[in-house]
Length: 156
Image 1 (tube, rainbow, N blue to C red):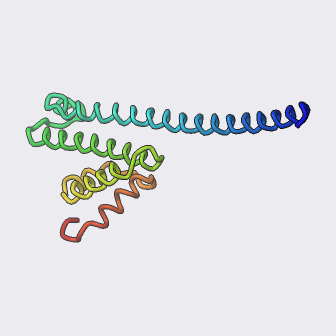
Image 2: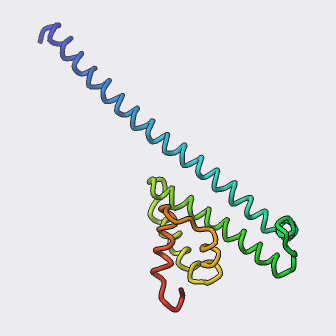
């Protein structure tokens, strides 16, 4: 092999190495963008859930009821607390569902969430709260609605 042949061979190899590096960089950039979106969604979900859980405090629940023109009876406060608790659950599940859909969570976590949804929506109070907040047309709402529809007739 002459020096010229070696130089040609080296140039070809370095061209492949540069191409492979660019492909790897593109994959890393794509993965980083996915993770960044997941962190943004998770932060959003956490802020909403934290706010909703704070609203479950009896004093804050009473203030919300009063601000909306209601009478903060003990029963109405309990209803408001349950409603805000349910909302926090729903946002947490939505975040888990979306991260699983994006390939950022494994099957075990997704399966645990599905089991929790089945157990939770087997109770009428949770289903009633779900009906108040669901917005048809999203993947998460379609997913939850399918779970609710799959429950045995005596539980739905």
